[in-house]
Length: 338
Ligand code: TXA
Ligand code: MG
Image 1 (cartoon, rainbow, N blue to C red):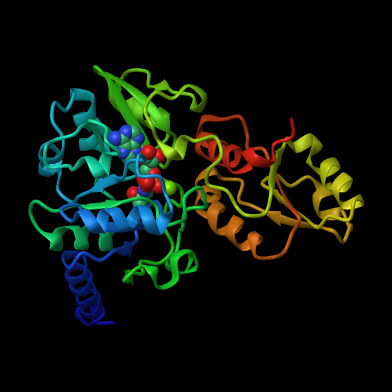
Image 2 (image 1 turned 180 degrees about the vertical axis):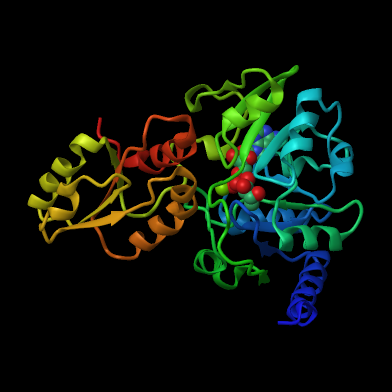
């Protein structure tokens, strides 16, 4: 197909999105991680509406998305050297840096804090939109889902979440990564992992040539809703079980008459050989990148199938699976058995 013809309608959509954003409306847009719900950073009422639409407490900060590396020091001040190294290496990409806020960032974006979360996303539509917005502009955007729920990884997910409450949803297809960005803060020049995400900690460490401190959710000092214990949750209660005991747990629950979705990544015969009609088996990819890409979309689909309980097989104990373990743990928190 002639590329110019294919691009033309997209340019029209970007122009329409820019006009809406400049008129103070909210536009959902694709990124490589998950879809974002955007507002023009210079428009206070559009920023407030994000909190209303998401039903998110206003002290939870939003990420500022922009397109050009030379804007880093427009939105942040006193950027430490390791932050510059990470930005140079991973942007555009699934990395959010928490840095001292510049006066260009309103406090309504940062939840009143003097730090700001910044990222250049790696998606052609997001980048085209951000470039078209022009100098001195950026998009503040959380994930385009209700507070505490699963992040959307396709335009139809955003539509399910918000319907007509957003003025426009730019459709960029399914998100390449499918999990949110890795969030890194700094204490002097030490990098601290605030949320595992699309970039593994080991890759950060390779670039920094220093250990990244992994901050545990229980003793957070920086507010980050994605680090609340219960987050990213499907509506159907979810439990996470080790490979050895998940089948037994499924049988136990099915005896009580519960319809179970058994979500595994490993393939021992007994999963597929179980003929219990109350247990429905869903096999996920055994590769962590592929698993991450499908996780939210799968949980969303399972949520609509009327199961009484979702049982997920615990991921391998391997750094490559850290983000997935983190999300499954948070998604299952409210059903955890004590
Ligand atoms: O991949 C992503 O990061 C997606 C896409 C749309 O960019 N965005 C996203 O936004 O996941 P949200 O709002 O759902 O989660 C952003 C996280 C929250 O946990 C928030 O608290 C944290 O970033 N955050 C933002 N600014 C912060 C700050 N100044 N200090 C600490 N945490 C911050
Ligand atoms: Mg979110």
